[in-house]
Image 1: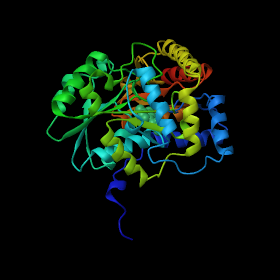
Image 2 (image 1 turned 120 degrees about the vertical axis):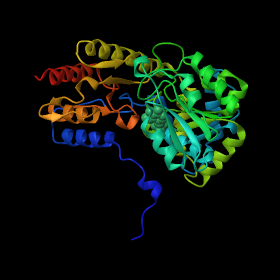
Image 3 (image 1 turned 120 degrees about the horizontal axis):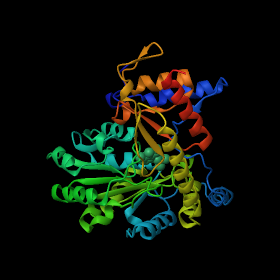
Image 4 (image 1 turned 180 degrees about the horizontal axis):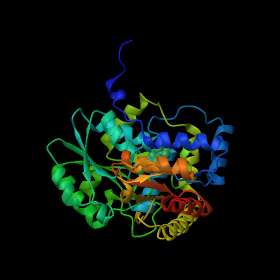
Length: 396
Ligand code: PLP
């Protein structure tokens, strides 16, 4: 047999998936396990959104749409960006795709030539790095300072710029840190982008899940930066619609046209009935978004209060999204339950086996001594999980 593609073989299988598979296996065996791995909310899609999807099927909206998505949905996205962010985009500057993740892939496919560099602040969402490499680019990792809560530093970004830099990725609020980039830092980064003609891919998928501080959409900073920005968002996180697979990008018309054409040869168009449901989500009553946000504030506070009772761990205080990063560096090099802990991956594996708590180790996110706890779960589970962590650490 001839070899499979080098591109595909370079993809790193994630520890996240291994831990998740173990967790699901333990659940299936009836074991008492608590999961903090999910990257999706535990709420259900709002009723009016589900009804719009059902109605679309009943009305036979079951055929292809335009590759960039329906005009109706692109208008609803334009209206959302104007309403929430004071950003003006025409429908032909918007492309809809099968989820924010795929939108990201289409974006990189249309931006990168082999060897182009993309600046990626760490910790980063695991798929960014893989996708940059899948598209022939080079991920230039800029480590953010853990003693400053991993907040982005514009001087570090400036140092990473070379003539090959094509783009920078900004994710605020961030998965996995839950931190937001301040307006002041965003302004400095925007200045660098304009000066060096670098594209900014601004992943704003958690824009509605902000608990502290004010969210700034990158493209609002100046007309010049708007032209260089590819704003990525979707309905997955804000409206509990992960399975519907609708994400979108807003950018200059030339690039949007290119992305639509790229998409026309890869997925044809996103699912028609899901697009109808997304219109209902974006145009409909927004109180469902606020309800979810309030629930997350409560859960985050419970988590932080409980975690403060546990010794030898360090927490990065989150301002948005639904993740909390926890340093387990104090245990690295130590032996726990007869096993040497080399990194957070080892800690997470042992925590699952011994205490029945599933968390995501952040090796694949560029932070090998950290765990990511997703608090898209009930407060009962949060209390149970952290009690178990305490017992695990205390050897009880
Ligand atoms: N961006 C970030 C930072 C994410 O965490 C996710 C999902 O986990 C996505 C994008 C993509 O979400 P979706 O493909 O469901 O729209």
